[in-house]
Image 1 (cartoon, rainbow, N blue to C red):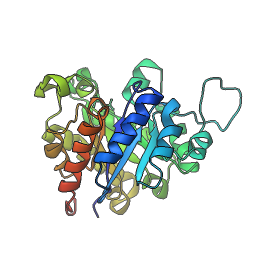
Image 2 (cartoon, rainbow, N blue to C red; image 1 turned 90 degrees about the vertical axis):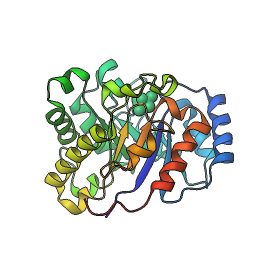
Image 3 (tube, rainbow, N blue to C red; image 1 turned 90 degrees about the horizontal axis):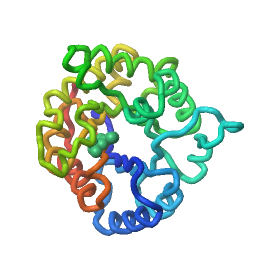
Length: 269
Ligand code: PEP
């Protein structure tokens, strides 16, 4: 069974509320329906309510880019799963490399957040990926597999089947390839597929083939409306997490449209 194709935008710290509302109206105008592809917009906290209201009834999902694992209490500045779920948010990005590198997110925290998200009905998009140094040292597989195992510690097969894994090689993220056209900054489809295949194998090892075959594995790292076709055609890549190219409704909808065109069964792994 082929996993659900999921195309998710990661706006990072971009877009005011006003920008988000304008994007939503423009995206709804261009967007031609889901097909078999799920579309998710992961936005800053400040725009989540506006987006869930704008996208109500459209089949477009809204996600956060982080959350805290505790239910409530003395955690100034944090946002709980229940707060997100209450406003109609259904996805949450966890363990993005920028949060790991700049905000001290640890594997242990990510694992706690995965449990909390699942308990509250949110779909976690769990980000994993290696640095260029790790890739050059030949430890990509070991590192990425370790991150996957750690994020899913204590998660049963039913929970794992509700997770999305985003493979994002850190060296390929936000390198300006979308603007510069420098293809060397994007993982080749083969490189990306190799790593996603490795992730699929870990999932198979942990949960068996039936569950592993249900888990969407996205590629993220300077994906755009041109390179997405090749990346999404790979056997183990069933979606994309898109930063820079998701900030413009035209550019993002182009990726969604191409994913819909490609969304033919990929066969058994
Ligand atoms: C990301 O950071 O999740 C990402 C994929 O960004 P970009 O597409 O800009 O490389």
